Amino acid sequence: MTTSAKSNFMPASLVSNLQQVLALKNDGVQQQRSSNASELNKVSSSCCSSSEEAIQGKECVKPVVLVTNGEGIESPGLTFLVQALALDDRLDVCVCAPQLDRSVAGHSVTVRETISVSSSQINGATAFEVSGTPADCVSLALSGALFAWSKPALVVSGINRGSSSGNNTFYSGAVAGAREALICGVSSLCISLNWKKDVSCESDMKDAVGVSLPLIYAAVKSIQEGVFPKSCLLNIEIPSSPLTNKGFKVTRQSLWRSSLSWKAVSTNKRPSAPHFMSNQQSLGIQLAQLSRDASAAGAARRLNSQKQNVEIESVGAARKSNSEKTVKCFRLEFLEEEQENVDEDLDIRALEDGFVAITPISISPPTIGSEIQASVSNWIAGALAKNPLAFH
Image (cartoon, rainbow, N blue to C red; front, side, top):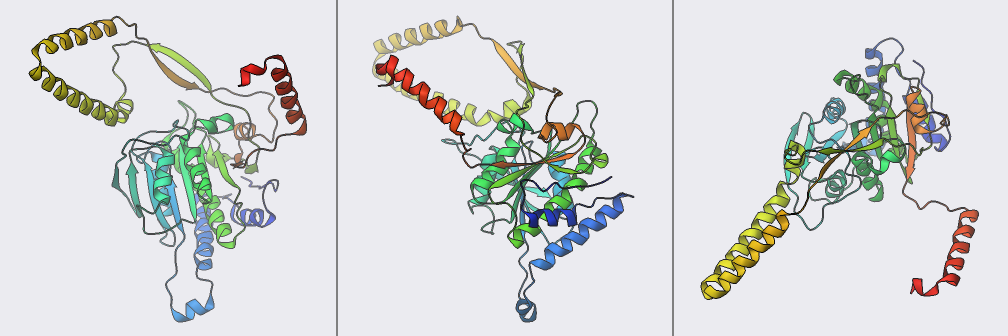
């Protein structure tokens, strides 16, 4: 298997690091592991490169890698990745991930509600699980409330199951975790495996870890050298057969997205366990409010029996009215779609062609072309001229 790194969109120094590190195996997994260990040695030695510190025997500060994801802390992708990173103690590996699957939570955050945090056990890593979204997890971890360090060297979101290419990035909780880190000024990677239903298996996720490690080590090294891109995160998409990938390819974000399919479901069908558990907190709040309302109503009834009859009659009428409403239930599913006639330098095309697609995603406002600005100006001028009161 050959490995390549195209230089567009990336600083030459970072590309140089990638070219040094991304030489994947040609004759067995053991050689790749040796390459990974060798690169980690370079990362470790660079954190204590000062000869004066070495002479004085000062403690080497290990680079911190914070891992999160979209699918929850118990997902195989996160577990395999953390275990692999923690094999060498020269990285300080920490985890802050959702308790449950929040893979399509987008960049939502939890406000006006309390989220719970509990410690979790992942060999070799300090880990917390959070009853919130991926963006919540990263924001909370970087706030200083959970960990002793002030700022990690790198945030890695993954490894996630399913492609986050194209416009799927807007739905992806995994990408949101990496984006939240970038917003907070921390370099980040989002790593996903192009999981194929009824084809992919758990061993593919382990293979995806092997493909990811050189990229993570290269990123840490480049961050320490000050050459890692600061204006974007890297969205890394690994093909469905990781060990037979054609190499690394820097791509542009496409407009592709999964097809959205809404299906009607029976109203008496109970919600799935993840959905049920995710609503426990809201249910508790509602029950507490009902209890307060019942207490207040009871006090009112004791003060005025006539008013009691009116209240009971009113509540009964309201319940009767609500019971007459027609309720329909629907479930949203994401369907896989293959794209045709897509440019070769776009993420989804490179991924389907067997490359590891590396797509820079920026949070900077896009540059609007002069033609678009002119067309918007002309439209506004015409709209105001025809109906100026509509804009007051």
